[in-house]
Image (tube, rainbow, N blue to C red; front, side, top):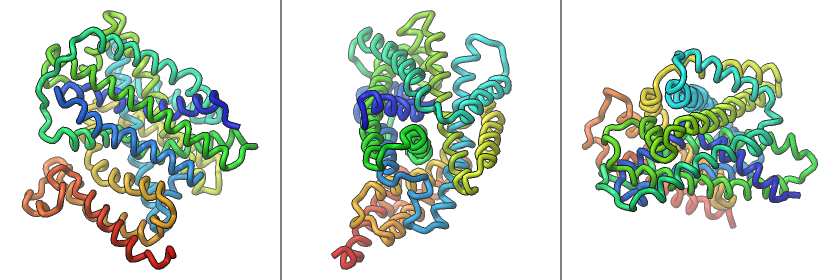
Length: 425
């Protein structure tokens, strides 16, 4: 039986596992640069940072499996390779980035310690939580997330009611698509297929007696609640950034702007509140990523507890090493990987939410192949020091917006469903 308490605890856990470093530092600068078009930019951002990730959670509720189940209709080999790539990216980029953000925003203002020291202590604590995964839902859902949301609402509420609603001019050339692409940097679509599995396993451990339908309903309801919370927080942060366009230099960094917002809203004590917020938001995401990766490797090794522990150790060691780099650098090196893996992830999430008659094996294979092929130009162009001549791929619709895969994937989806129609009848 799904009580309101169960739904809220699970929703809070989902929110917290999603709401990490990128989710905190990206929306304010997005709003700051979007000016009077903050609404359009925010909608684009929320499509890739809220709608798609929540659909990923709903797909998990439907499949009741792991990330491997997302791509198995293409082929078991593809699904295995895709899973390994996603987890490799997750523990190599977004997980270490949480330590980097924590150091820059929560440690540096108060302590004269090195990033290495921060990373070691940070991922030691992450490791402890990962080993005690059965308590993840309760600790995150009951304690950490409410604290995160309370601090965020304080900052957003004070800023919203302290400034006139006047905005500057936008600095974006393509506000809507720029918002969508910025949403990639949250890693939340990838996070949905990674941490969604963590939630599934945690619920199965906690609610062993519940039926499949009961668990599925719980996850679905919690997913929509978490999605609404994410949307409201992102919009609030974007508006806050847009309102202070006259207070900061246009070249301000993401972390510096967030620090400035906390100071404007909460005064001298703002940095202390922000430090707590950053630490909590980043930490819960790192725990979710490392736990999800360890779960997957464990499932591929005959449920070996040793494999789970070894993977957790490797994930935390990678976090220590890569987490020493600054946030801007990690965001920059993440872009090529995101331009390739994100479109594939979006397509898999969407297909897994469709009724079976519109998502046969042949449809999965055709659409994923088309997505991979038409993502290659965006991937190559996003690699530093490499740039293809624009005329080479200018014939691809939406290519100039780095979204050349969208229409080809849609066309192939329609054609493959039309060709496969006799098998549905």
